[in-house]
Amino acid sequence: MRILYFDCFSGISGDMTIGALLDLGIDREIFLRELSKLGLEGYNIEIQTKTVNGIRGTDVNVVLAADEQEHGHRHNHGYEQDHDHSHDHDHNHYHDHDHGHDHNHDHGHDHNHSHPHGERGLVEIEQILDPSGLSDRVKAFSKKVFREIAAAEARVHGKSISEVHFHEVGAIDSIVDIVGTAICLELLGVEQIYSSALHDGNGFIQCAHGTIPVPVPAVMEMLAGSGIPLISEDVDTELVTPTGMGLIKCMASGFGSRPSMIVERTGYGHGKRDIGRLNALRVILGDIYEKQLPGRNDEITVLETNIDDTAGEIMGYTMARLMDAGALDAYYTPIYMKKNRPAYLLTVIARTGTEDALAEIILKETSTLGIRTRTMKRYCMDRQTINISTPYGDARVKVASMGDFKKASPEYEDCRKIAEDNGLPLMKAYTIVSQDAARHLGI
Image 1 (cartoon, rainbow, N blue to C red):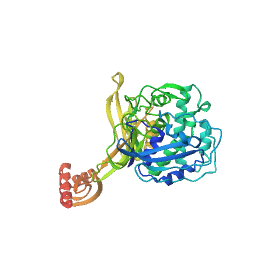
Image 2: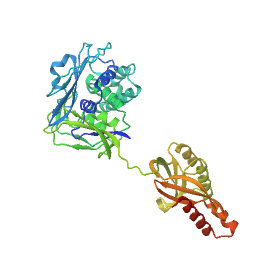
Image 3: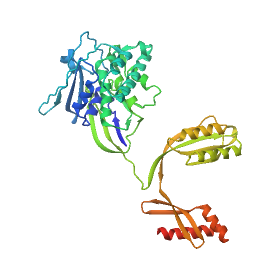
Image 4: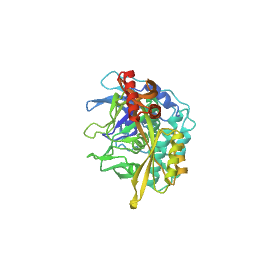
């Protein structure tokens, strides 16, 4: 499984995210061509390869065309500032700098669409996205991030989402950061994204709302109830921006230690502020490392429910129905519930994708009101059934193999018939069939 791991040891912001993803080796011309489908004007995107603290990485600046002379101050605090210009611009290009080497300048294509780059609300942003030529996947992810940030800003300011016109998501740089990240993820083709705990600073920063504490209020709103771990660093500034927080919350399916993986590439996206150590976002691209056992590995879904007031006959009937409906296995385990009531735990093992039909049977046939499900990995030996001829009759034998290792299990019904037909103890019939199967298989 192709995965991406975000190592947020110095927090995360929108421009750091794009920088790190581009640093993995994404073709910049393709990236810019896709970004141009947004139809958004009035900015330049500057992509620089540079070395900071001895670490080579990529630095990305989204610069408003009217403010090119002041672009070095963008994101000094990490909190995107308000931009409000009344005029449009009709050019969009990027500069590719490799510090310490010859400079290489490439320019993107001009666009014919134009949107003013003042404050925007969620509706205006979606009106930019919907008619664009971006893929449905990029549009859907971008909207998800915008809505996440908009909801947080609305809670902070005590307004509804539709009332919020805010600089954080409405600014051109944030729009480019979010949509650009969505494009990068699509180009990389990753299946799962994981992240480390988020590291943020302390103190206060100045932004469009005045002096605010770190972590900034919108970030705290997105963290609340999310289960995402936050580590406080002894750094007197913001490390996690609202854009970065919205992106990682919508991207990552899990937070914590780096999973066991086979690393393909590593990318660094440099931050803008000197924090006394490396200020960068590291992303690691690779595949999940899974020790593959010989045989067959697949995915199953386990359904469980506690039953304390259903007759045994009903439970037996339910089990038969479940097996007939395709369950891989079904069984009851005696348990004691609250108030020391004796009950049974019904467990059903199913192929993933068939659990809905099995759950319907359980809910209809038993007194339970709910069912728990979980998806699990299953290791299976390869299996086949062979016929063995013995002096006492034929019998089917199930053979399981894992590489060169094999084991055999005679079918009960066939052994019973041999025992009854020949007046043998059942155990003797099992022994005869097992020995003949072992000789046949060479085990």
